[in-house]
View: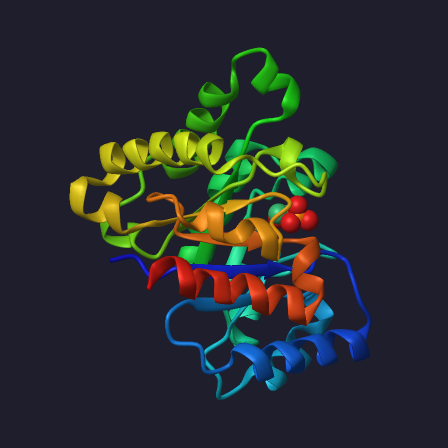
Length: 255
Ligand code: PEP
């Protein structure tokens, strides 16, 4: 049984005060939730404030990115070990905004995943096709390729620390989520890949989240699909009431 994960990616939003207030409100609403795991991904400088706000609750902290090297002269970048020392448990790797706006390649994503694992972080590997790729009939191949390159050579003993997130680029921030059926189809393909890579047992244990224009209204339908093990939420995670409603939809869908 895979425990559902509801993750909130705050991207480059907020100030010190507003991030602290959001983390506190989420801690108040969801801090004792048992049925689903909840994680928040604030911008880097807000990590310590967020860590303070959620301390003692069941909510996990995550970061939005990390550098593939352990440390060194990489101005502006942040290392996995630094994130771990700020109580981060998760880190995103390969979010489509990083790939599209910052030129992150599949190979860089692979290196980030290895670094996250070496830093005792759980990487959330984000994959997804653009609307042009989907319209050209290449969506599945693109997602296979992103998964294949990121996970090549990985030992199945670390596989269960991984989380995947299927985030079609056309659904992110567009108000046009994938239908539960469209998302479920891609999740099933990713599940097959994971089983091929890591074997039936480990490949079945890895959680696959859906992300892209999730709201309290559509969360239940998405989570009702067998291979959708949670949600990566952008815009709606910036409002504590909406994010809490999404997390509670997971309780409904899995009980
Ligand atoms: C995201 O950026 O990961 C995301 C899913 O954003 P949104 O929910 O706003 O579409």
